[in-house]
Image (cartoon, rainbow, N blue to C red):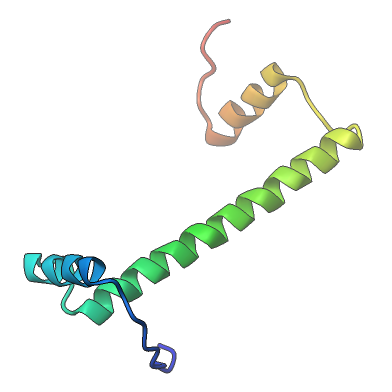
Length: 89
């Protein structure tokens, strides 16, 4: 686990009340852990989106370079990869 750093933020009272109520409800053990979890999930979602952006660009680059296949061939490839029987067309 990495070293903890302290950051102080000011929240509108309505937001602070919401966080406190979530802690009381058992969503987190403390306001700090509640906010930290939200930030961690946002960071993970951002990393996943960036990964999708890279994959999409790779696909666009492949198509532009002529490295493409028909939809039927793509489905055949997926079914073969997972060892599934392809339904009759």
